Length: 299
Image (tube, rainbow, N blue to C red):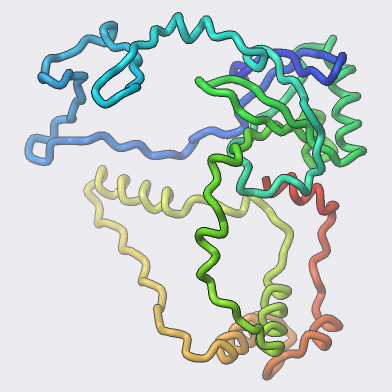
């Protein structure tokens, strides 16, 4: 198991117990490239140089803040270390919010939250169960990686898991205004028949989310290319570009999409299907979890 990313106290009013936080993600399949000299094949190395092209040793480099054009103040590592704020060693819950209040654009990165030791296990379990029963998320701030983050702690939807999930959140100031980008979208009166076909198309393709079924096909193709070049084999041929024919009639496109999807199933139908009729003959996928559980999973 990896080392904890952060360790400290989880505090709710007068209740306090130790927790460890682990990163829930890893760049497992990422392919990294180096820069090479095309002519010689030698690897390109980057050097630290000052504006007068003099080489600068690593121990001579210090952080600097430009407070005015061309004017800097230096910040030493030990000066940053001396910055003491409560969230460096304690995640203090400031409030609880409903799961539905957190929309996807706020979520940044997931973390695993576990009790620090067996002694903290009882308090951890009580808080976890209380969050689960009330459908609430614990919200507070935590400092790591050179900044203070907003952190949401919640219970995962899988009942078999005894830990909790933490999600760093973006601050409101970091999000651009939706209105700035959506304001110019024209208002459209939705056609009833088109809407019914679109809804049926969605229903036919509805399925339970299985994360393991989705893989990075680009990374797989890149590895095949690298393998072929290493073994001096013929390079794999690229996939044909998908058709980019312009859709002239939305109704026809929807109808053909529904009919094409129907052709893959034993029960074939012709022509457009009305929404009322489709609801009787289609087997809809009903979510097995509550709406709040789905929110946590999508996060």
